[in-house]
Picture 1 (spheres, rainbow, N blue to C red):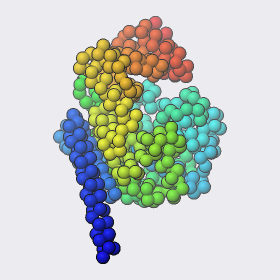
Picture 2 (cartoon, rainbow, N blue to C red; picture 1 turned 90 degrees about the horizontal axis):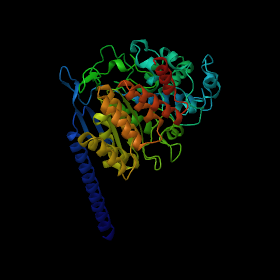
Picture 3 (tube, rainbow, N blue to C red; picture 1 turned 180 degrees about the horizontal axis):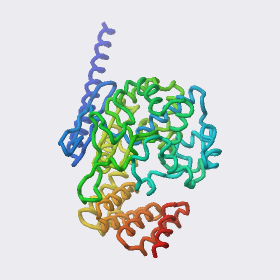
Picture 4 (spheres, rainbow, N blue to C red; picture 1 turned 90 degrees about the vertical axis):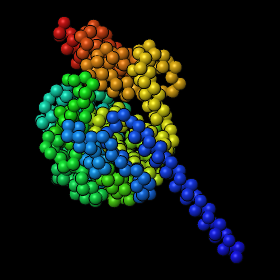
Length: 477
């Protein structure tokens, strides 16, 4: 009898625990839904799954603003740098098959690479972890001002970076660069004998049941795909289609298209060791240290605990992310088709805060958002006071994004103020001085542009952009 009473009591306890747990999940999802519904101009789709149960699957905004075609939960979105996840898996698969090693140098697979430092000293590990020191072709004017139709294959991109100077010594510092993953894509093709997209189709998409993912030609019709919208530099306060900001086809660094369900299948395939064995899955999903937010092609928002992993993507008109919360059991997919400051970042950080609690990076984002709310509402001096009174850290990236958005919208006085605010917040940031130099240059204030480019170069003697601009400005005197 006592045994029966004990079992009944246990069932009741477990039942209560389940009800409490379900109630907690429901309240969190309600809070997330209400928050997403409140975001102004938010456009995209979100999927939240817990233990194979869909808790939230919803779309917002327009896939095609001109025809007023709404986004739906099956819409294909540009994935941005999420494609790096696939490249990293492909490389780890080849390592697992003993076809290369993390310690191998680029020259072992691309002996014709013109830069000897890269050939002899840049390893697969450095490429995967963005510590190679390779140049950033994606931000150079040679890429930005050229026709994107020139870049349809991996090798089309070679002239943009192969003969450019290194930004730092291999293995020294983390600097996120698409160049790393373009080279990894070339190595995948060399080793496998397959084109990059063909390798992914056979070895990742097919195994993970990803039927709507691929590096499609962006200037050709893509079935059920959302257009990307970014700030127009022609008509301030309006949006333009982002097609001329990307290479005409996605590559190993990103730029392909995917859906909510496909990314969920990918996340599941990773966790179930369908793409890599348990050893390499662990390597892929574990932070390199408690201080590293980036591993072998994976991002870790809380590396101290290492309980969240995934990868994001952001570009003009693109904000995307997949994340697995191992402690709480959630998988979150977020795909949007506007600039990241048009709701994506707010959605990402709010979802994480509600599901898993706050972190310094989350507080940094919302503290910085508060600074800009005050600045846009009450002006420069109030923005300065908000920065000086901030009790927590601020996010440099947000200042850069807001400043360049103002430049694109031809609001040059505002751009100058934003970068000046950024320098108050980050007085030792070479990037902030470089950006202020560009704002002054755009506004025709050449002397101030020179002053800030020189200060940027003083803080970082390797800043190639500042060097180039100072040469141009000296020639135009």
